[in-house]
Amino acid sequence: MGMHTLRHDDATYFADVVETVKAAAVRPQVHLTEVPAPRRIAPHAVAFSAEVIDPKNADDVLGTGRFVLLHDPASPEAWHGTWRIVTFARAELESEMATDPALGAVGWDWLLESLKDADAIYSAEAGTVTRVVNESFGGLGERPSSVELEVRASWTPDESNIAAHLLGWSNLMCTVAGLPPVPEGVTALPGRF
Image (cartoon, rainbow, N blue to C red; front, top):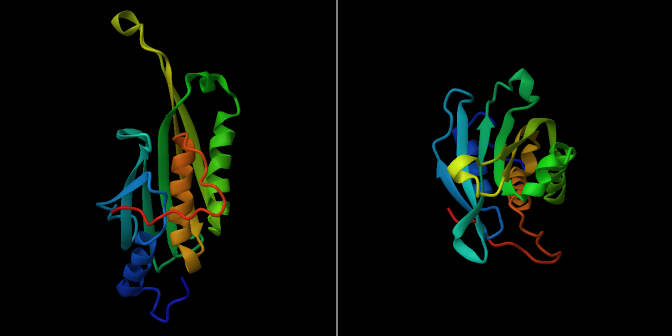
């Protein structure tokens, strides 16, 4: 999306950017839903929740997440710009990954690679990667152990193509959920809202 001639503090400008983001071509396994956005963080905000659906079983949710786009013309110092994206992506992994000491770094690398592959230019990135190991005991002792990975991140997007950031984040969700990458030359269809 090119630069707008509208003033950057104009609500119309924000609405135009949001429409471009909603038109982003995410993978068909990613189901996006607009949800109420936080109101106290920035004057302009939009939020989407997402589910990654198993392509073999539409009733099986492989991962969940949230994408929040914030805009504050006052350019909060911590943001290093007038836009900020705040996200998380969560999915269950194979239990043998629980003991991998590099899992946190791998999760963060998945985020950075997903943004790079989507040509999403950013700065001031920050975040955490958390793994939770669930072990069952007693009457539930027969349940296998499970591992959940959650990548929480925020960054300042280059405003020339904010839709690329939704695309990159949705690809991260698919990676965390265990879906193989989309083959080169294949184009995803616009996500469902």
